[in-house]
Length: 447
Image (cartoon, rainbow, N blue to C red):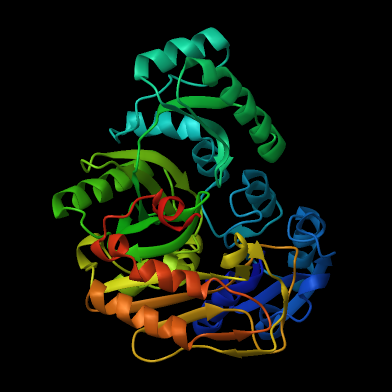
């Protein structure tokens, strides 16, 4: 087992990993930017090293500075968390070649799955359903038009290296197709340094359902059931839950089995998420694999009782998973609301600043994963999430009721948060019925 782990991240995920390390008797090393000198992860880690200026490009994305901190601290492994360098295959390779175990999949698996077009081909090879689309990247206009006509309009243009909605466009007809492709290529090139795009049939009003998986190096691959992440705004998830409401049990089993096939076929180890869209007839299609732990992993932990961060660490250290698939049982219902420092009444404008007072909710079934505290100043340089409010109750109705109570109890003074918006969503008849889709927020809450 590792003696000391460096966490190449910040905020609540860094704190989450530090806590797991402490419970396992492993030393923890934090890295931080100048803007994060007073962050809670810096305070609670056994050691902490400043790796640069406030901007991510000057600190959390500086591979050489992070490796230097690992060398100085004597760490023997690096956990990337999510975001920043978590899915950077080059960083993964540099960690390993520098003598540090990377707590995640191999660089080869990460690189293959990080390219959506390659991942799509792998899905097809492993009998995982994919949305009808182009056979590879779109290289010229004539091929684009021919493919779009074959699969039928509207079509979705997707960046092969994309994420977060970048490099993604919808074309309703042939006239708009070529312009949309150019826009997607330009945006993808600027965001990811890769302008490659491919086409898929556009699925209207889908649900976004993903499967949490984890695999060790001893041939064990397990799923921890599915999560529904359909409450989104501009392709950014706002509320996640497990299990997915109104998903037939037979279809649930098929989706989870498909996720396991995908991971086995990719020769993948450690934690990951296989993402799907599900249409109104409950047909499901592969989207992508996130080769890392995700923001919403706590909802899977709550319904299974598995500590995913500890399992990640054990797997990376060469140990087998502490459970088998038939030992996992989905119990109760979990909800997660991402609490962001944003003003929902002003088009979700980021609202960094000092927190003058804060009171975190509690009670049975309530978990609040956060790195902020009274007196903390939320910096303007990073993602606006300041915490995750997670509820676990015996039924979905009880989980919604407890979440609404906890949101009302959460007090954050000095900045605006999205707590009030979440409460509105939880009261909406469509959400209560579990019939919402990925366009729900845009349709019902955009004036």
